[in-house]
Image 1 (cartoon, rainbow, N blue to C red):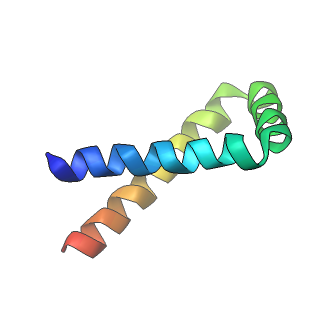
Image 2: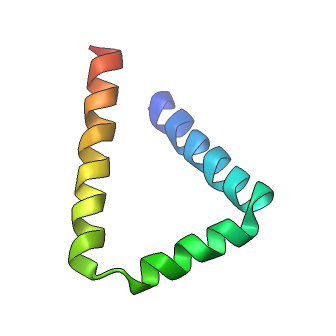
Length: 61
């Protein structure tokens, strides 16, 4: 359970750094995402989730 909390904390750190260091870039990324078809966003999300799962599996073995 503590690993899950640490993982969530790291997500917040990286998200927060994006908004703190480059808010204009973050807004452009959001605009681009709004213009992207839902099917593309869904596929990208599944790919990102699979890569993340593989990384966790690889590191935690």
